[in-house]
Image 1 (cartoon, rainbow, N blue to C red):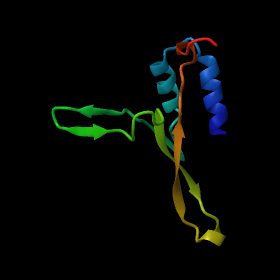
Image 2 (cartoon, rainbow, N blue to C red):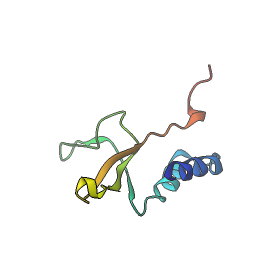
Image 3 (tube, rainbow, N blue to C red):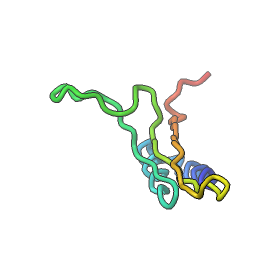
Image 4 (cartoon, rainbow, N blue to C red):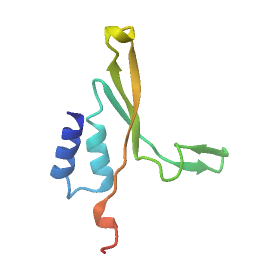
Amino acid sequence: MFLEYLTTVVQIYTKMTETEILRAIQSLSRGSVRLFRNNVGFDATNKVRYGLMPGSSDLIGWKTIEITKHHVGKKIAVFTDVVFGYFNSFPPN
């Protein structure tokens, strides 16, 4: 169901900038799905790297799922990521 929302958002907002589309997708982060912007870089002043790694997903987070009684009834978070490519930025074939 969440992927259907993502598809709808991307189809509706194709004339938006990459940042606007990412924010629209991130706004769907509610309920059992949580997404956060994965900025990647290096802060030279504090000498610290942040984000997962260069080239990693634009949005990262988790989807909480409930394990059935058979699996003790606990909830776990499943790592989730969204890779976004702004299609107009790629050179034509």
